[in-house]
Length: 211
Image (tube, rainbow, N blue to C red; front, side, top):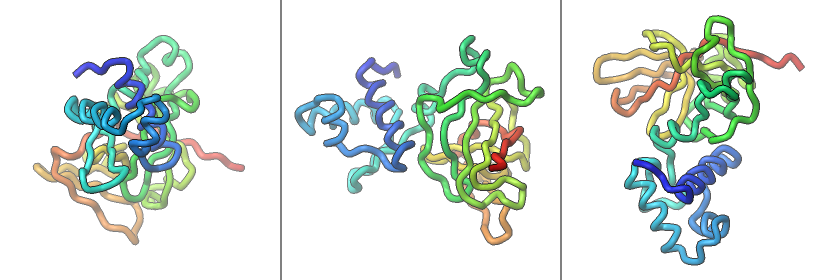
């Protein structure tokens, strides 16, 4: 469902706060940011975003807003646009290499040149946090390049969206179940219903800062 300009602004604000702080804004914070005087007014906007499929909420928890796959699709820059194509792939912040965390943001922090094999493809870059992929040579602080136009194969390292949260793991589909397997001998695989996992792209490259 299409969003009004105000609804899009609120959705972007929610995503920005999740990226910056690791948790969503409160109803009061949203009201203050958009000059909405009543909490009911904010709640009405959130109900519409939820009904249209862009957020999920748990009624018995504070700050329980989660972005959905639909939100990710409208917030991710499209690297097929001329400006993005000339600049490279957008760097969108952090992704957990441990347990899934909400991390997507709507604006690129910078633009990075993708590897030669992925030129002309849609993609994005993310900074890794955590150590669950160290045995694959992917370390905390590395920047991974995620190709959105490659069909994932069994065993690929992927950026996966699980219940509105992003994580980095090896991908093993088993019929109705998807195994997201870490590359750390001290950690166990996570199993999810296939319908709750959306593969956002395949990791094709990484960059590491030396100092």
